[in-house]
Length: 256
Image (cartoon, one colour):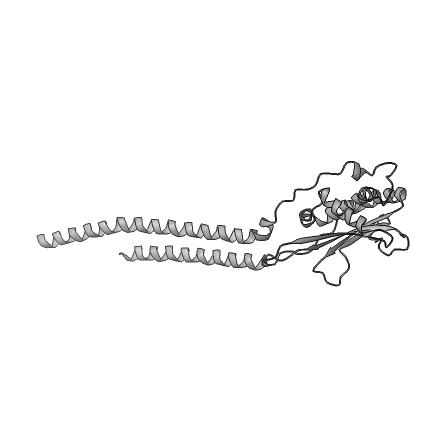
């Protein structure tokens, strides 16, 4: 093999190993940056809180019950809830509030785990109330939330939207449980609730970094195959040419 061809092969091998190093480094960086993921439970948007407060104010005035919500991050130990609200206003809880002797509250406790964990994200929903309310009635209201489409999966996918939507459903569920009389004019949310968001899947959200790394490795494998095919073709062309050159040199020496 001529020196030029050896240099070309060394250059090709150097490029291939450089590509390997870049792909491996990229995979490591992706794995490090996305091994944990964001596990913070998002609070309801400002418009969701404002709309819910307005609806609960009308329902509370007509039914004589206070209604509220509480969103808790399960892994935020000892910290204040992510968000609370009620017919008394955004950020104002009804539990043990002197302004609300009779109250009902929905509490959503959300737990987001890191991507490296084998556990799944989860949601725990509870409906509580003032001591004068029967626990069986509160349990009936709690089960009614799932019947209305507010399942644990919905709370996991969009906690802020789900907890405020559950809160504005409480007046309707209180009437079904016999805790309050029907309002003179139905609350807008109870009359025509907005469609629920798709439950979806958090597969890509949890694993997109590893999927990207897999694609990089597949591209790297394709590069190796291409380099191998090119080198094999060059060898097939070079070997016969070398043999032909050697034969011609031999015949020349014999004639001489």
